[in-house]
Image 1: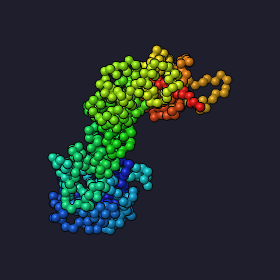
Image 2: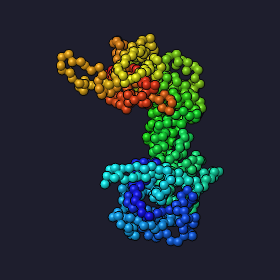
Image 3: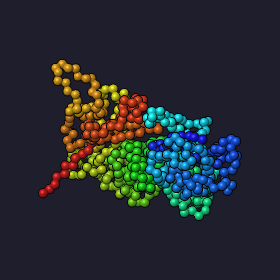
Image 4: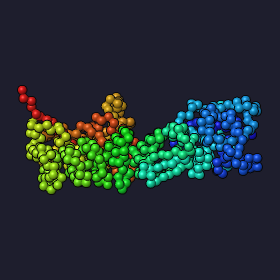
Length: 595
């Protein structure tokens, strides 16, 4: 048999990694594992014969390694029990020079490092199966022609990756040729799983498995796993064979644990990405707080920060979820200390905190620290009176927050300018969060935002102080989808030249200014916050938060990643851009220093 092949092997988990073997086939390799992978030709002497190492003679490949790349030979020598199920049949081959040659000097070129590090997705078994099935004309696959090859005739690339994955899965399910058994036990030993596996595949995919297999004394590896990890262990092993896995919210954490424990980095990174992209997905018991606690435990800073930011910007959904009562004291304090929380009002936060304290009954210090993180000055005086008389939690710990309540009442009874002369009004007690109440801002839905400039007007309360409760400020907001700085705009020097109606290029910008000026603005700096909404997993969530004084140009990255021209953009909901503007008065301290 004469055959020339150009085989490209890829793994589904990482398509960028490929192993290309070019040249002439010197052996036809066959795996006698099951009928799915039987390679014998009908009528040949080998047809129907057993390929068990106990009944066959010495294997020429095992003895010499002739005709195989050097890294294949090294693995055959290292994992003999697996590779001895391979057998070869010498065939007439054609070398690169076009002459028949019984020697095994046919050209072989590996367009990667000749080493195969532990954990890589390129499997020796893949090479064996791919080469062994080239003569199967009925096998499903694809044929690609590369006209850039030398000679202009093009080189054909045969791909049977889908069929290969199916056969590897069948190999795992049927356990044919297995040389190691994985015995998965839970700490309570109430659940035991035994999975027949193949040392070669485990070693190639996981350096931890490789080390364990080198030290083993028998054919069984005993693995101690938690109950949640044991429940998904078969899914984890299937990924090592097939390079793909189906995920559910409740499976993400245990699979991430297994990927981290056995150093399967591709799977670990993929699950982290899955978690980040599914923070907004609805679940009956909630999952974001649990993922945050897990990320904090294992030191995954990316997942931890993403979860914390999502909870802060979508706090109302967390407060109303089933997992709120079970959040840790550490997470609770991390949220209470933030000024970028997005919620309806400070009263909503206090009600949720009160429910958490009643449910968990924390120690006195934890409860006091949490209650002192509430910004009572942001509550109207009538709500403060109600809390003092009706809240059992505040009644129990009133002495711990008495000074804060006293300052809040003073803040509401006097003008902010007068307060600023005697107290530090820059502390967190007098700093608003991102409240969605109409007193603090307004939603703004912009249809077809890429079309042209838009404007809107809205009113807010002058400030949270009871002294300013009757005063209103009117604000004008203008949105430009393609704003350019003056220095970058095109110049038209000819008299009477028509100016373009639409500026090419540019970036989105929002300007927010007061409609009128007032003496009441003295000592107050109005911070504007724009909340950009997006639709994720069918839910409306806060995607970005931008803070500025007058224009989003100050931030430098306002909607920098949003493609407002594409209808399928995640920033557009029914072709509209959903924004919410919040105006927060920040007071300046006017305390005089006595000489």
